Amino acid sequence: MDARISWKSVEVPEGASLLRKERFTYQAEHGEYDIELFETPSGEYYAVGTPHLADKIVVFGSPVVADPALALQTVIDKIERERPGS
Image (tube, rainbow, N blue to C red; front, top):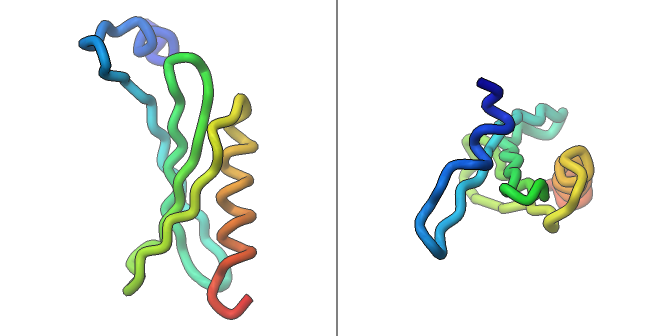
């Protein structure tokens, strides 16, 4: 059974949704970030990134897009643009 196809056919109650999530770690000179990439049943993607083990939580997010790489790239670009010391 192909997990990438079968999860989209799972029945959930009305008003509920099921998302697929992948985790990434972005390691940069200025710190490490946890990034989660979400896929909706309709094949759209968005990403959310947060600093790993930071004193202050900052959330970096992407819009919902058709390309998973674009969602990830948007979050990485935001981290680089808004990082401490930039």
